[in-house]
Image (tube, rainbow, N blue to C red; front, side, top):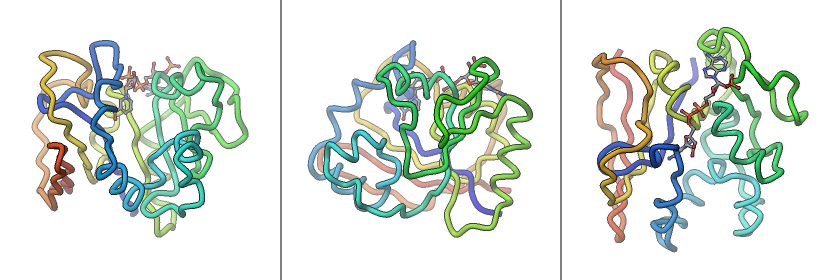
Length: 194
Ligand SMILES: NC(=O)c1ccc[n+]([C@@H]2O[C@H](COP(=O)([O-])OP(=O)(O)OC[C@H]3O[C@@H](n4cnc5c(N)ncnc54)[C@H](OP(=O)(O)O)[C@@H]3O)[C@@H](O)[C@H]2O)c1
């Protein structure tokens, strides 16, 4: 089975955005050093318009060939008129309301989200599946998550959108690596203990 990796940006106190989910307060920390790391290690996690703007559109995927996101996260792109925000990946959007996909590269998952994700994980590929978020589908897919890559920005918010919208339940992860950056950003990788 290949891995489902929840790769996410959050505050020190574990929020992925403001109470409405807006994560733009974190953008300020994507400085030259940190962007260089993202482009070198996770180029496919940068949306297509951002890759074009920063001239990294030619970089091949390193870890993922597939992305799963919730409709509310996908909406951020749709509102900008972008129907395929990760054109370099196979895109899946969980939604019971969207109906027909607005883009040939985007497949809508309306039913049995965990089962569809298990089927993606069972595919034979050297690349993993990138769970983009947001909180709602991360909460629903927690049992399927094999790896966490958490970009922690040096801010405390007090409140906001949590990393998982889920009920209380303890799930253990093992710390695999930590990278630190000059501006106080941390990137921690955890694997799930099964
Ligand atoms: N900090 C970060 O790195 C980061 C990363 C990603 C997202 N975000 C933030 O997260 C926010 C969105 O998160 P969110 O928790 O509000 O929403 P979300 O998880 O992105 O999407 C929720 C939507 O997914 C669909 N959905 C949920 N469960 C489903 C299921 N079992 N089957 C089919 N469809 C299902 C529903 O869409 P329908 O209503 O259409 O049925 C639901 O409204 C955004 O504001 C974004 O900024 C932050």
